[in-house]
Image 1 (cartoon, rainbow, N blue to C red):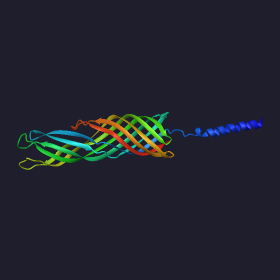
Image 2 (cartoon, rainbow, N blue to C red):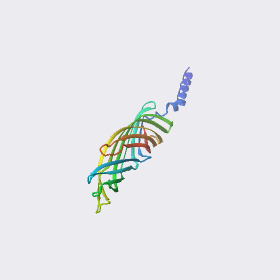
Image 3 (cartoon, rainbow, N blue to C red):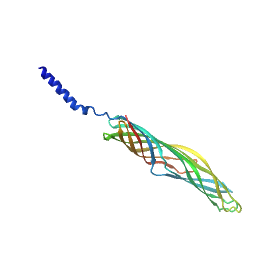
Image 4 (cartoon, rainbow, N blue to C red):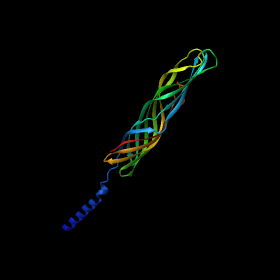
Length: 246
């Protein structure tokens, strides 16, 4: 009887030992944090027209802006709430100065209806930041590869320099004008849009790895006091960086 009990206990222990790999599987990570850089694949362009009076006539200044896409600081995190479903947030920021192309029609001080052409360039500052909220689904493609897809609202803020006036020189008989400088006015606006994207993280050692990002976002801001057209922010964005899981 004693031998039978010992044999039974040994059999149970062996069964548990053989099954231990399944019992000892890693608990799926519940939190992912990513820090890195990203950039959009296309530039942002828009135009502005300002009217003014000079010599009892109306003149115009039309300025074209092109915002080059620079590296954006990128950071965010995802929390798994139930199975693969969770919530996430990410933030990006970038700023820089780009040349704005100015084309003007300046009324003539002597001859009516004979405006003079003016061209010039001014450095216009632009900054852009965004906060992306997401409903996410997180699943392991392999034991070391995390795939997180999601989408939701995006809150953007843009700060932009606009040409509000120009200085120019002219000499008799005043048939031409020479651009000297531009007066810039800085405006900032907020807008709400949307985002959707995916992130793939590869765990290299323990909880540390690298990740790649693809995200599309869009929002539109208006600067009604400047005479500018609507400015579309966002676009297709790619990036990568450090991937941490807990």
